Length: 170
Image (cartoon, rainbow, N blue to C red; front, side):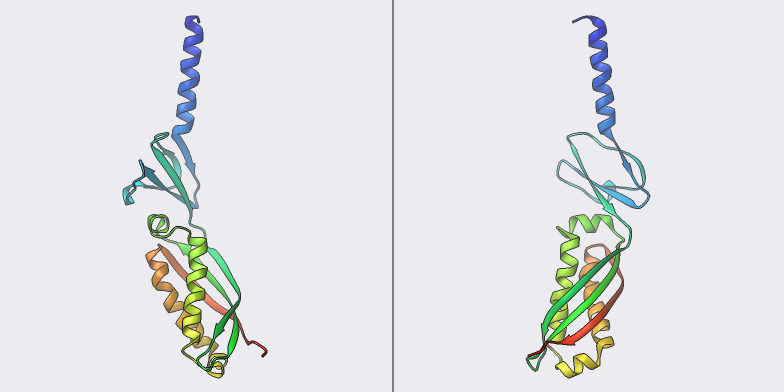
């Protein structure tokens, strides 16, 4: 192998390493970098070109754009042992990318699941008549309850709306 071939190989290897060392982070994103399996708030990077160390760093992108989750047909039992079906919509956004990666395994699965659980726990404290008559109270109680775990996960709930609340036909 001649000296030109060695130089060409070194140049190609350097170009590949340079390409792997730079990540583009969009204007609507943040990147949380795990370095050798560990991270801290100092390893959160914003929009632009972000240098990383290949093999050592594992970057995770976090989308900061607003998210909308639809809960459809959530079955809840009231205190008088009647069932209701509830549809709800959650409008939220990630405000702390570090918490959204470190404190919850899957934000897209956890937020709807905890909302359903809290909805059921609120519904079981009321009668069906009270629940159907007070949809705004249900919405407000659910919103305040969901904000607590969401804040631990770095998420701000912008709006939560119970869009439909109907009794289950017996």
